[in-house]
Image (cartoon, rainbow, N blue to C red; front, top):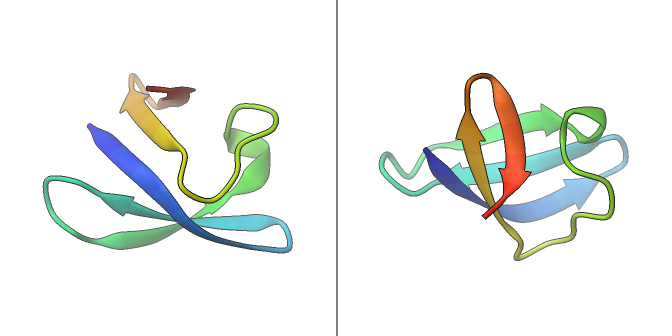
Length: 51
């Protein structure tokens, strides 16, 4: 599943999933180091990676 980071506030990033359009709050610690707003991510096997 692919998503895009739309906002970062403190320790949380808000990601928008491509297939559903849903925006979810994700702890920044679960994301790859150095991610920023606009980065595309792949969520697979309960793990985020840069797409």
